[in-house]
Amino acid sequence: MRLTVLAALCAGILLPSSVQAAEPTPVNQVFQFVANGVAEIQNRGNPGKASSYLWIPEQCQKLRGLLILCANVPEHRLVGHEKIRAVCAANDLGIVWSTPSFLLSDTKNDKGKWVENLPGSTAFLQQQLDALAKTSGYAEVATVPWLPMGESGHLLMVDALVENRPEKCIAGIWIKNSHLPPKNRTVPALVVYGSAQEWGQDKTDIRTKWAEIGKTYDGILNQRKMHPTWPLSYVLDGHSGHFDVSERLAAYFAAYIDAIVKARLGADGSLTPVDVTTGFVAALPVPGHEGKPVVPATAAAALPWFPNQATAQEAQAFAAINWKAETQLPIYLDEQGQPLPHDFNGIVNFKALSFEDDQRTFTIRSALAPTIPANFVHAGEKLAQGPEAPTAEWLSGPIEPLGGNRFRVALDRTWLGGGATYIGLRAAGTNQIRGILQPAGVDIRGLRALPGAPNKITFEAPADVTVGAAPIALTATASSGLPVSFFVVAGPAIVRDGKVELTAIPPRTAFPVSVTIGAWQFGRRTEPAVKIADVVQKSFKILR
Image 1 (cartoon, rainbow, N blue to C red):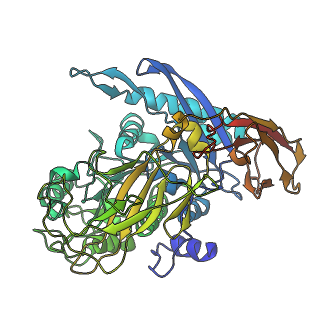
Image 2 (tube, one colour; image 1 turned 180 degrees about the vertical axis):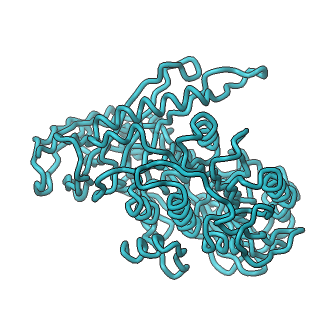
Image 3 (cartoon, one colour; image 1 turned 135 degrees about the horizontal axis):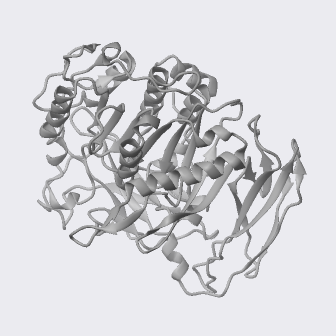
């Protein structure tokens, strides 16, 4: 499977829908190195803290660049996605994922709201990269070019790097909002807009709002007209919204990364300007605009630009939908089969879960709403219903998808970093009914406040090992007597069946290599109740 994916991406060909990756999961995403740092400036009056994790392709002799991501929602899927990692391996790119984030909110504006310190954030990232360069043995981590990717609040992280260090940016990728950098019009940009925005969806007519994108697209055309040499790529993902990165879109990101790196990044790591006349332009078939054949770019073509024909054609295909399709709405149900309220800025937020006997596994119950929900605009009016029942999938956070709308708590490094947990209900569409993903927050972190008996972990640190060691059994107990589980915080290793298994170590890694393991126990919500234990971390070293 990996060879098929890699060959397709390196050839600049997007994968057909029949070629699917395994279902994305947070379990055993390998990051060999971590830098834990405190910023020189404060964050909202407190010390700005970040943990930046680094993955280097296992066969990489020398890095040429870094994908830079932080902890919003789809980033958790993307940093471990096999198609993203395959294209990074093919181009000698590492992945840096910061959770908690290096993006800092340091000052208040004239309305008393915290605003991001973009120069300070960029400096904080460099501080993290300097540390990772020393830890990893790959000194170029501190100096190679960046390709930042961000969603929602971390659109501003991409802004920060592109605006403050444009000479270091291969490109920028802004995910799911129609958001452009404030000033820079030279760094290649991929902007992906999910037109069905779920935040505040209860305040608008969900049947028509998603298709009102004519002015948004006009703005992109105007930008290309005003800045004809700016390599601005644009995707309108009409069936999705703020939270959703589908398998198809993840494959698109991988294909774009491959194409723009080949256009921009020299063998020595230097960046060259993109000549837009070497790419392609595509007229997107959105309301009020006619889709036309993809053609080679010219300096006068005021249309979205793409680095090759394949990415142009797929961007056009994303928008080639029925923009007059009817709307369906997946809804979440409680144990009695009643709809849960959309009381979290227009979406559902699970504050309580009903766990199976293992106290970790839960099931999401769902349906398609027959009518617009009670607290929405036009409540009670009829909605369309697609051909299939909605299915639940993992979007972010430390929960493992089991299939069949079942999930299991699987704590990982995001539990340490404070990242959010989201799932989504995906309902397939037809030509007449639009497909949709409806997100929901899952407040598993809030379960720590529930009453119960104390629960403390005693964890014995594994002994140091040498390269190629057999799986290492882990030993830990909880004062509650409940079973303890484990995850790798950082290091070339995974955990399987209570044992640490070493993974391949990049060839220039500095020895000894540290592996840090987190031991956790998730308590019990039934009587006699037991509190969630604090994670206990222990480290061992891999010796040459």
